[in-house]
Length: 274
Image (cartoon, rainbow, N blue to C red; front, top):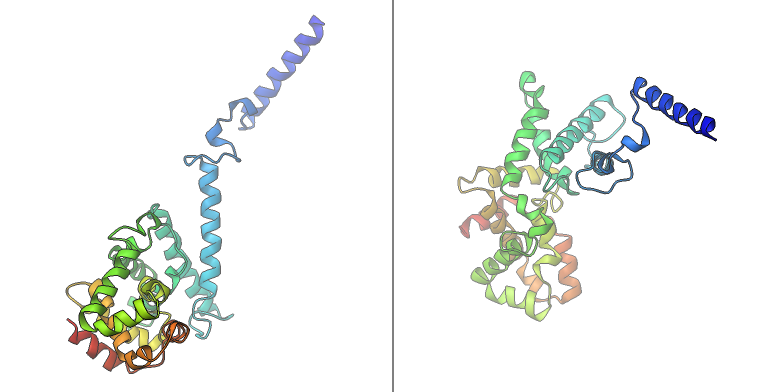
């Protein structure tokens, strides 16, 4: 028995030495935080799996970005290169902003920025489209980041607070419309304006019109936040007759599928609300 025990101990000793020589850790040397199945927030493996999921989500969303535009989609090397640039920006943003990381739809906000920089007539500038887009994307979201933070959803600075500001703005300029929407037909802003605000109207208009709107949105010296709310308010005012004549179903359908409109006139009305 003693001989067998010594042989076993010597065998384990040699095994430990072999593991060390091979650069491998013995099972007993692996801490809880280093275990691949650890769910701890500080676990390197847990963080690895979380970021893998984020990267997969970014990859799926980027591939769905403006499928009607060859600039973003298709089998061409140009389109694939643009997709890689979008993914790079979104992945780096997610890693640098642990409190928000990546929220579905951020690809739609990044797309207009990258499109403009990548189509710069000066090819030297166009070559830096990815870096320039990242800088502007970070700056743009710095004013809207609270809308993407789930912990702040119900706070005055979160998305619910922003929706309340829109409701107050509509009540200020068209109390009858606000009352009909939110009281009579019970169409609250979160049913339609959540997407308007979080995606900065990129899903409500075609790409060219979005660029036109963003020219005004980003050129306001007071910042884009209040300008965005005024544009949203103007969107409601422009279809007020249809809204006042509608019920819950028709109004919700109208606002979730906003009709084509004259963008210059929309921006003119929004400016009058300043």
